[in-house]
Image (cartoon, rainbow, N blue to C red; front, side, top):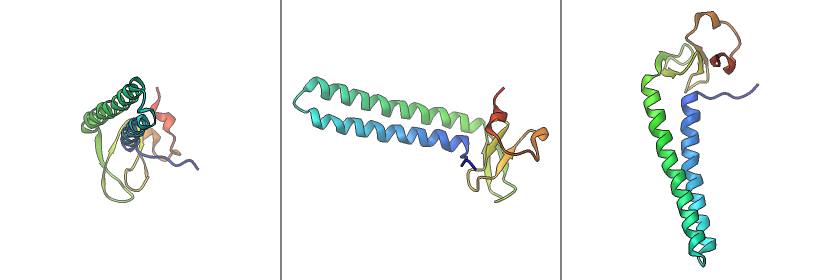
Length: 113
């Protein structure tokens, strides 16, 4: 069975990976310290990755404030649901807000129109 994560956590993980990618690209400039143009290019690309990460964090923060909060029936903790189906952030329990999907097997395709 495929391992699912909540949508909010997926986007946050992507933003965190952008930060690390940006740092790795910036550290890659060390290998080209004799060529100032390549150092400038590597530093600029790394900075763009970090700025992109900041934008993604801001976007998911705004999206997270609009998400519906529900109590997970499995673990009893409050979690946020984006779309028709999502996964609990804590215990990975499938959650849905659509009564017609209750009892059906979890599939992220239900969120597509």
